Length: 432
Ligand code: UGA
Image (cartoon, rainbow, N blue to C red; front, side):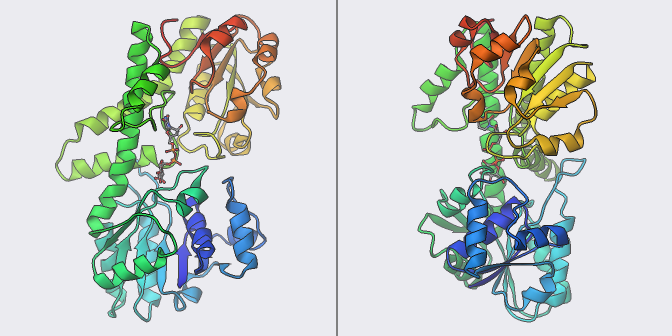
């Protein structure tokens, strides 16, 4: 099928490349000329394992191409995926200006029946809104469909190719059948529901996963008081099939471009619908508090933060990505520099992004050991596998007393670290 994907962020680029990989003719469109020029030369703007290979292969096979003009490529498309950003507004609501602009452009240029697919995460009711915008300019027949994405950064290609489920929210049988044809090559569970239900599935899924994280973080904080180990507790809980082991990793809280935005947006959707979603409010509050616990622990153990050399390993919001949006690591660094700490930091992929937004008080290193040199405290803020494998004997010898090690992601063995001379503090690993 001929498919146009508007927006070349994580979602759009992965979707476009993978739709080509499963046999479609895909064109990715973005108004950013520099980005499209780079993509045409095989330069991928993000760090996403496996994506570069797929893009290069599909460009070479001529199934994937790029354009800066939606108008130029719209005619040829049977299906148009809209995968532009829906950033969080100050009031927590999703900002729909980019989705609306694309809808308008489609309305002004569409000439025959097409299925318009909302891939961006949008509030319930946006499908209808997009339909209204297009219908304002175009009187012919078309359908708007909601097809939320469940890709995780760092494993987005695999998540697209091997999804747990494909959700299709369609208002007509014709549109539903077109979508089933698009995904026909992927032999995974597909569910077809109303547009509103599909939009809700996306928010409810992310909000539930965020709830699991905030829940285990609360359990972790109690574990610290009663001297239990949250890692053992999570293992014991996760073995219950009804609970499952995933998303029970305690730490400094969730970040990224999705969970904080979507949890807030669902809370807003509830609010504007006149419903008080109490649980979600608590999930948000716990997540904010969880980041601050690191600061509290450092204050307690160092007496004061001002002028103290502190190393933070990790800047990305999670491992295997260079994304620092809503990163707990970045938040912690900002708070520490605000309190006058001298921060040294290292991240295998995200340093360049972080340099652009940090102002003063932070030294970036290309080597993790160099970053830990002379630090009195070390905070592991991202769960990069590389940080698990560091030579901590060497790290201990490089650091200055009192060699505090705050394992914000519980990736290290407390006893081993204590034997090496660290004052180890995990999240929910028992009393200090
Ligand atoms: C998330 C969802 O997992 C995807 O299904 C969804 O498609 C995506 O949002 C989206 O809406 O676009 P992502 O933001 O890439 O994907 O990251 P996750 O792997 O879900 O992690 C989110 C955050 O939670 C990270 O900061 C991670 O460190 C944290 N986390 C995750 C925990 O603290 N504990 C856990 O047990 C799991």
